[in-house]
Image (tube, rainbow, N blue to C red; front, side, top):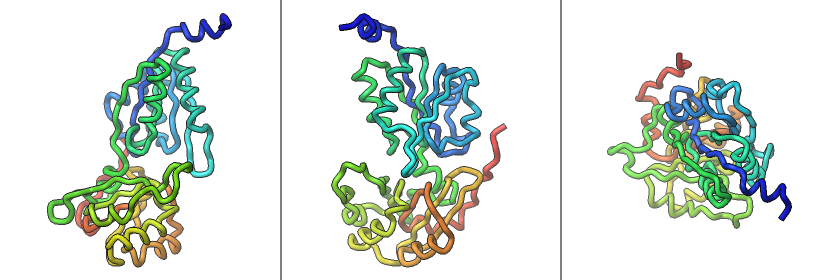
Length: 263
């Protein structure tokens, strides 16, 4: 073993905090997460982190954008993990900032395992997930005693290495009152077809919520029979959450909260 490699393995390790930034509204950032952003030595952050939350970051911290968007990956996952390990050797407190919650379709679990196996201390700071917050800001509760007592959170964009389809949409259609679909906009036609095959009728309500909890939040509400045409006519696109089920009918009844900046 070379001296450089031995020094690298024996160097003191900092701690990595996997922090959920929430869905975009800075007022939904947790107090603990905000404190870590203000005092971290290094912050490695994803795409879709709102400018207001980026503004909370310690200006003296090393700030690294490592976001992934459809077809525009700045770093692949293995490179992000290697970067986290390297920065933990350089800094005492490293924040890995993820949109929503790190453990809800955020690959936080993968990063946690890789860091622990590399001997890096890890702490999880949960965040509010978009699958709850975006519908709430649209006046849609994901559960309601009169409309839906069960909810399923599911990804509409599976890992590229998986055989398709991995999600059993027909089983979900039969077993859950409310279905919240992350990253499903580009596969929505296939998803709706599979849910119909599972017994959901064409009249099933569906809401699409783009840029949830942000000032530019946009909603599109329809049914299985109409939503695809509505998307085409309005140019509706990702990033968006889809909510399926009778709870969508409450959309017009509950006042939408004011999306004002936090002072």
